[in-house]
Length: 137
Image (cartoon, rainbow, N blue to C red; front, top):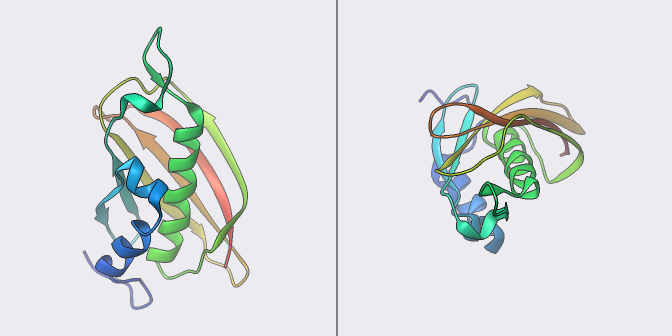
C-alpha cells in the first residue's frame, strides 16, 4: 500500500470505524486500503435476513454498508467526511450468504462536500448492490 500524504493511518482508521457499536455489531473489518480504494468486509449474520424464503439480507443493511464505506473511503483517502448529505443505492441481486465485500472509491474530494461510490460484492465477486454518497466535511 502506498499511502497518499494526506491519507489516514490504517490503525487510526480502524479505531474510528470500530468506535460505533453498530459497526462492531456488523463485524466490519478493513480488508485493504490502496491509493484509490478502501475495501471493507462484513461477515454474514443470520440477523440481517429479511426474506427467510430465499435467505436474503435486508436492503437497509446493504445501504448502511454502502454509506459507511463511502464515508470512510473519503476519510481514508485524504478528505473529510462527518455526515451523509445524500445517498443513492441500486440493488442488483439478493445477498443470500457469505461475507459481503464493499469496495469504495472517491469520486470527488471537496472542501464542503465529497462524493464516493461503493460496490458490494459477494464471495464470488458478483455485484449485489452499488451506490453513491455525498458527504459533508
